[in-house]
Amino acid sequence: METSLPIRYLDRLDLDALRELAGAVPYQLLATDLFPRIEVWIRRDDLLDPLISGNKAYKLLFNLMDARDRGIEKIITCGGAWSNHIHAVAAAGRRFGFQTVGIIRGERPRNLSATLRDAERFGMELKFVSRDLYRRRAQGDFLQLVDIRYQDALFVPEGGANLAGVRGAKFLGQTIAATLPRKFDQVWLACGTATTLAGVQWGLNTAKVIGVPVLKAGASFFSQMDDWMAALGEGPGSASLCEGYECGGYAKFPDYLRQFMLNFEHQSGVPLDPVYTAKLAFALHSESRKGKVAAGSRVLLLHSGGLQGRRGMAL
Ligand SMILES: *Cc1c(COP(=O)(O)O)cnc(C)c1O
Image (cartoon, rainbow, N blue to C red):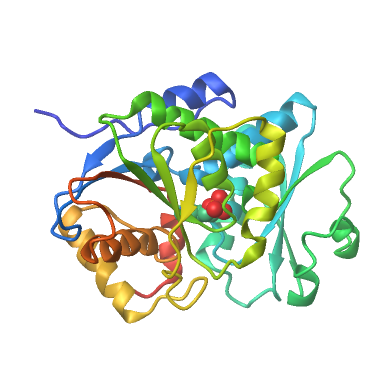
Protein backbone atom coordinates (compact mmCIF):
# COMPACT_ATOMS: atom_id res chain seq x y z
CA MET A 1 0.00 0.00 0.00
CA GLU A 2 1.21 3.50 -0.77
CA THR A 3 1.60 5.27 2.55
CA SER A 4 3.56 8.41 1.73
CA LEU A 5 1.77 11.68 2.44
CA PRO A 6 1.09 14.02 -0.43
CA ILE A 7 3.28 17.14 -0.34
CA ARG A 8 1.02 20.08 0.27
CA TYR A 9 1.80 23.71 -0.19
CA LEU A 10 -0.02 26.99 0.00
CA ASP A 11 -0.96 27.98 -3.53
CA ARG A 12 -3.21 30.95 -2.73
CA LEU A 13 -2.90 33.81 -0.27
CA ASP A 14 -6.26 33.56 1.44
CA LEU A 15 -7.80 32.31 4.63
CA ASP A 16 -9.63 29.35 3.09
CA ALA A 17 -6.42 28.01 1.55
CA LEU A 18 -4.58 28.40 4.85
CA ARG A 19 -7.45 26.80 6.78
CA GLU A 20 -7.36 23.75 4.54
CA LEU A 21 -3.60 23.41 4.78
CA ALA A 22 -3.47 23.99 8.55
CA GLY A 23 -6.32 21.52 9.04
CA ALA A 24 -4.29 18.80 7.31
CA VAL A 25 -1.20 19.15 9.56
CA PRO A 26 -0.63 15.75 11.22
CA TYR A 27 -0.61 14.96 14.94
CA GLN A 28 1.70 12.19 16.04
CA LEU A 29 1.90 10.18 19.24
CA LEU A 30 5.55 10.03 20.35
CA ALA A 31 6.71 6.53 21.12
CA THR A 32 9.82 7.23 23.21
CA ASP A 33 11.02 6.66 26.78
CA LEU A 34 11.88 10.34 27.18
CA PHE A 35 8.69 11.46 28.91
CA PRO A 36 7.99 9.09 31.80
CA ARG A 37 4.39 8.63 32.97
CA ILE A 38 2.86 11.10 30.53
CA GLU A 39 1.44 10.74 27.00
CA VAL A 40 3.06 13.12 24.52
CA TRP A 41 1.85 14.06 21.05
CA ILE A 42 3.31 16.50 18.56
CA ARG A 43 1.55 18.68 16.00
CA ARG A 44 3.81 18.90 12.94
CA ASP A 45 3.53 22.49 11.72
CA ASP A 46 7.02 22.01 10.30
CA LEU A 47 5.11 20.12 7.58
CA LEU A 48 2.64 22.92 6.82
CA ASP A 49 4.44 23.92 3.62
CA PRO A 50 7.94 23.08 2.35
CA LEU A 51 9.10 26.73 2.52
CA ILE A 52 6.54 28.75 4.48
CA SER A 53 6.28 26.57 7.55
CA GLY A 54 5.91 26.57 11.30
CA ASN A 55 4.60 29.40 13.42
CA LYS A 56 6.29 31.98 11.19
CA ALA A 57 3.87 31.04 8.41
CA TYR A 58 0.79 31.94 10.46
CA LYS A 59 2.21 35.25 11.69
CA LEU A 60 3.49 36.21 8.26
CA LEU A 61 0.47 35.22 6.19
CA PHE A 62 -1.83 37.43 8.25
CA ASN A 63 0.58 40.32 7.61
CA LEU A 64 0.63 39.55 3.88
CA MET A 65 -3.17 39.31 3.67
CA ASP A 66 -3.38 42.75 5.30
CA ALA A 67 -0.80 44.11 2.83
CA ARG A 68 -2.71 42.72 -0.14
CA ASP A 69 -5.99 44.20 1.12
CA ARG A 70 -4.29 47.59 1.36
CA GLY A 71 -2.71 47.34 -2.11
CA ILE A 72 0.82 47.17 -0.71
CA GLU A 73 3.36 45.31 -2.84
CA LYS A 74 6.56 45.69 -0.86
CA ILE A 75 7.45 44.06 2.45
CA ILE A 76 10.38 45.23 4.58
CA THR A 77 11.51 43.22 7.55
CA CYS A 78 14.61 42.34 9.59
CA GLY A 79 16.44 39.42 11.16
CA GLY A 80 19.72 37.60 11.70
CA ALA A 81 21.77 35.41 9.38
CA TRP A 82 19.83 32.21 10.21
CA SER A 83 16.41 33.77 10.73
CA ASN A 84 13.43 31.52 10.04
CA HIS A 85 11.34 34.65 9.60
CA ILE A 86 13.63 36.14 6.91
CA HIS A 87 13.54 32.82 5.07
CA ALA A 88 9.73 32.61 5.20
CA VAL A 89 9.25 36.25 4.12
CA ALA A 90 11.55 35.80 1.13
CA ALA A 91 9.83 32.56 0.07
CA ALA A 92 6.32 33.95 0.53
CA GLY A 93 7.24 37.15 -1.31
CA ARG A 94 8.43 35.13 -4.24
CA ARG A 95 5.36 32.92 -4.29
CA PHE A 96 2.72 35.61 -3.84
CA GLY A 97 4.30 38.44 -5.80
CA PHE A 98 5.61 40.84 -3.16
CA GLN A 99 8.92 42.65 -3.40
CA THR A 100 10.88 41.93 -0.22
CA VAL A 101 13.69 43.72 1.59
CA GLY A 102 15.53 42.09 4.51
CA ILE A 103 17.49 44.26 6.94
CA ILE A 104 20.16 41.91 8.26
CA ARG A 105 22.12 42.28 11.50
CA GLY A 106 25.88 42.73 10.99
CA GLU A 107 28.30 43.24 8.10
CA ARG A 108 27.83 41.29 4.91
CA PRO A 109 30.08 38.24 5.29
CA ARG A 110 32.17 36.88 2.45
CA ASN A 111 30.09 33.69 2.51
CA LEU A 112 26.40 34.15 3.08
CA SER A 113 24.59 31.74 5.38
CA ALA A 114 22.43 29.13 3.64
CA THR A 115 19.38 31.06 4.89
CA LEU A 116 20.49 34.33 3.28
CA ARG A 117 21.59 32.59 0.08
CA ASP A 118 18.08 31.19 -0.21
CA ALA A 119 16.57 34.59 0.56
CA GLU A 120 18.54 36.23 -2.25
CA ARG A 121 17.66 33.40 -4.58
CA PHE A 122 13.98 34.02 -3.79
CA GLY A 123 14.51 37.65 -4.80
CA MET A 124 14.86 39.36 -1.42
CA GLU A 125 17.03 42.47 -1.39
CA LEU A 126 19.41 42.22 1.56
CA LYS A 127 20.57 45.29 3.42
CA PHE A 128 23.26 44.69 6.04
CA VAL A 129 23.42 47.11 8.96
CA SER A 130 25.79 47.39 11.92
CA ARG A 131 24.82 45.68 15.15
CA ASP A 132 24.56 49.12 16.76
CA LEU A 133 21.98 50.28 14.28
CA TYR A 134 20.21 46.95 14.36
CA ARG A 135 19.63 47.32 18.08
CA ARG A 136 17.32 50.22 17.28
CA ARG A 137 14.95 48.09 15.22
CA ALA A 138 11.98 48.73 17.49
CA GLN A 139 12.32 52.52 17.15
CA GLY A 140 9.78 54.34 15.04
CA ASP A 141 12.48 55.94 12.88
CA PHE A 142 14.46 52.72 12.24
CA LEU A 143 13.88 52.69 8.47
CA GLN A 144 15.12 56.28 8.16
CA LEU A 145 18.15 55.40 10.29
CA VAL A 146 19.11 52.55 7.98
CA ASP A 147 18.26 54.67 4.95
CA ILE A 148 15.51 52.57 3.40
CA ARG A 149 12.69 54.02 1.34
CA TYR A 150 9.56 52.76 2.94
CA GLN A 151 6.81 54.59 1.13
CA ASP A 152 4.07 52.20 0.03
CA ALA A 153 5.73 49.38 1.93
CA LEU A 154 4.69 47.35 4.96
CA PHE A 155 7.29 47.01 7.71
CA VAL A 156 6.92 43.69 9.50
CA PRO A 157 8.90 43.57 12.78
CA GLU A 158 11.47 40.86 13.46
CA GLY A 159 9.84 37.45 13.79
CA GLY A 160 6.45 38.76 12.63
CA ALA A 161 5.83 40.08 16.13
CA ASN A 162 2.95 42.49 15.65
CA LEU A 163 -0.82 42.48 16.01
CA ALA A 164 -1.37 40.78 12.65
CA GLY A 165 1.13 38.16 13.83
CA VAL A 166 -0.88 37.57 17.01
CA ARG A 167 -4.02 37.20 14.90
CA GLY A 168 -2.21 34.59 12.81
CA ALA A 169 -1.18 32.71 15.94
CA LYS A 170 -4.77 32.93 17.23
CA PHE A 171 -5.86 31.30 13.98
CA LEU A 172 -3.34 28.53 14.70
CA GLY A 173 -4.84 28.11 18.17
CA GLN A 174 -8.35 27.90 16.71
CA THR A 175 -7.13 25.36 14.15
CA ILE A 176 -5.63 23.23 16.91
CA ALA A 177 -8.90 23.42 18.87
CA ALA A 178 -10.82 22.29 15.78
CA THR A 179 -8.51 19.40 14.83
CA LEU A 180 -7.29 17.89 18.12
CA PRO A 181 -7.23 14.10 17.87
CA ARG A 182 -7.67 13.81 21.68
CA LYS A 183 -8.38 16.01 24.62
CA PHE A 184 -5.12 17.44 25.96
CA ASP A 185 -4.33 18.68 29.45
CA GLN A 186 -1.50 20.93 28.32
CA VAL A 187 -0.10 22.39 25.10
CA TRP A 188 3.61 23.26 25.15
CA LEU A 189 5.35 25.59 22.69
CA ALA A 190 8.70 27.39 22.33
CA CYS A 191 8.79 31.17 22.90
CA GLY A 192 11.00 33.88 21.44
CA THR A 193 8.88 37.03 21.44
CA ALA A 194 5.86 35.15 22.89
CA THR A 195 3.69 36.32 19.97
CA THR A 196 2.79 32.72 19.25
CA LEU A 197 2.06 31.99 22.91
CA ALA A 198 -0.26 34.99 23.11
CA GLY A 199 -2.20 34.09 19.98
CA VAL A 200 -2.40 30.33 20.48
CA GLN A 201 -3.69 30.53 24.05
CA TRP A 202 -6.32 32.99 22.86
CA GLY A 203 -7.53 30.77 20.04
CA LEU A 204 -7.24 27.52 21.97
CA ASN A 205 -9.38 28.31 24.93
CA THR A 206 -9.54 24.88 26.56
CA ALA A 207 -6.14 23.40 27.42
CA LYS A 208 -3.48 25.12 29.50
CA VAL A 209 -0.77 26.58 27.27
CA ILE A 210 2.82 26.52 28.52
CA GLY A 211 5.58 28.50 26.85
CA VAL A 212 9.26 27.59 27.06
CA PRO A 213 11.42 30.72 26.56
CA VAL A 214 14.58 30.06 24.52
CA LEU A 215 16.27 33.20 25.83
CA LYS A 216 16.42 35.09 29.10
CA ALA A 217 13.41 37.27 28.60
CA GLY A 218 13.06 39.25 31.78
CA ALA A 219 10.13 41.43 32.68
CA SER A 220 9.60 42.97 29.24
CA PHE A 221 8.36 39.63 27.99
CA PHE A 222 4.69 40.12 28.68
CA SER A 223 4.38 43.89 28.56
CA GLN A 224 3.83 44.08 24.81
CA MET A 225 1.69 40.98 24.93
CA ASP A 226 -0.76 42.66 27.27
CA ASP A 227 -1.31 45.42 24.69
CA TRP A 228 -2.01 42.86 21.98
CA MET A 229 -4.36 40.90 24.18
CA ALA A 230 -6.22 44.11 24.94
CA ALA A 231 -6.47 44.84 21.20
CA LEU A 232 -7.88 41.38 20.53
CA GLY A 233 -10.57 41.86 23.13
CA GLU A 234 -11.58 39.67 26.03
CA GLY A 235 -9.68 36.38 25.94
CA PRO A 236 -9.72 33.28 28.11
CA GLY A 237 -6.06 33.79 29.08
CA SER A 238 -4.48 30.69 30.54
CA ALA A 239 -0.82 30.78 29.60
CA SER A 240 2.23 30.34 31.76
CA LEU A 241 5.97 30.09 31.26
CA CYS A 242 8.27 27.19 32.07
CA GLU A 243 11.58 29.00 32.58
CA GLY A 244 15.10 27.70 33.12
CA TYR A 245 15.58 25.96 29.78
CA GLU A 246 17.33 28.77 27.92
CA CYS A 247 20.40 26.45 27.91
CA GLY A 248 22.87 29.33 28.02
CA GLY A 249 20.90 31.79 25.89
CA TYR A 250 19.59 32.41 22.41
CA ALA A 251 21.01 30.01 19.78
CA LYS A 252 23.35 28.42 22.34
CA PHE A 253 23.56 24.68 21.76
CA PRO A 254 25.44 22.99 24.61
CA ASP A 255 26.46 19.38 24.25
CA TYR A 256 23.79 17.98 26.60
CA LEU A 257 21.13 19.61 24.42
CA ARG A 258 22.69 18.21 21.27
CA GLN A 259 22.75 14.72 22.84
CA PHE A 260 19.11 15.04 23.86
CA MET A 261 18.05 16.30 20.43
CA LEU A 262 19.80 13.46 18.59
CA ASN A 263 18.30 10.92 20.98
CA PHE A 264 14.80 12.41 20.57
CA GLU A 265 15.14 12.35 16.79
CA HIS A 266 16.49 8.81 16.83
CA GLN A 267 13.64 7.50 18.98
CA SER A 268 10.77 9.45 17.48
CA GLY A 269 11.82 10.02 13.87
CA VAL A 270 10.81 13.68 14.26
CA PRO A 271 13.48 16.27 13.35
CA LEU A 272 13.92 19.27 15.68
CA ASP A 273 15.72 22.58 15.32
CA PRO A 274 18.49 23.49 17.79
CA VAL A 275 17.24 27.01 18.60
CA TYR A 276 13.60 26.43 19.52
CA THR A 277 12.02 22.99 19.41
CA ALA A 278 15.03 21.13 20.89
CA LYS A 279 14.76 23.31 24.02
CA LEU A 280 10.99 22.80 24.05
CA ALA A 281 11.26 19.01 24.02
CA PHE A 282 14.16 19.10 26.49
CA ALA A 283 12.10 21.19 28.92
CA LEU A 284 9.18 18.75 28.85
CA HIS A 285 11.61 15.83 29.19
CA SER A 286 13.25 17.36 32.28
CA GLU A 287 10.01 18.51 33.90
CA SER A 288 8.36 15.12 33.44
CA ARG A 289 11.39 13.33 34.86
CA LYS A 290 11.27 15.58 37.91
CA GLY A 291 7.62 14.64 38.34
CA LYS A 292 6.47 18.21 37.70
CA VAL A 293 3.90 17.16 35.11
CA ALA A 294 1.09 15.15 36.72
CA ALA A 295 1.28 11.42 35.96
CA GLY A 296 -1.17 10.42 33.27
CA SER A 297 -1.28 13.89 31.70
CA ARG A 298 -1.75 14.09 27.97
CA VAL A 299 0.50 16.79 26.51
CA LEU A 300 0.70 18.26 23.03
CA LEU A 301 3.99 19.72 21.77
CA LEU A 302 3.74 22.27 18.99
CA HIS A 303 6.40 21.72 16.34
CA SER A 304 6.85 25.33 15.28
CA GLY A 305 9.14 24.57 12.33
CA GLY A 306 12.53 26.22 11.94
CA LEU A 307 14.21 23.23 10.35
CA GLN A 308 15.92 25.35 7.69
CA GLY A 309 17.99 26.84 10.56
CA ARG A 310 19.51 23.42 11.31
CA ARG A 311 21.89 24.11 8.47
CA GLY A 312 23.67 26.61 10.69
CA MET A 313 24.60 24.09 13.37
CA ALA A 314 27.20 21.37 13.15
CA LEU A 315 25.33 18.28 14.33
C1 LIG B 1 10.32 32.23 15.82
C2 LIG B 1 10.13 30.85 16.32
C3 LIG B 1 9.56 30.59 17.58
C4 LIG B 1 9.18 31.69 18.55
O1 LIG B 1 7.99 32.34 18.21
P1 LIG B 1 7.52 33.66 18.98
O2 LIG B 1 6.18 33.94 18.42
O3 LIG B 1 8.51 34.74 18.66
O4 LIG B 1 7.51 33.38 20.43
C5 LIG B 1 9.36 29.27 17.96
N1 LIG B 1 9.75 28.25 17.16
C6 LIG B 1 10.34 28.46 15.97
C7 LIG B 1 10.77 27.28 15.17
C8 LIG B 1 10.54 29.76 15.49
O5 LIG B 1 11.14 29.95 14.30
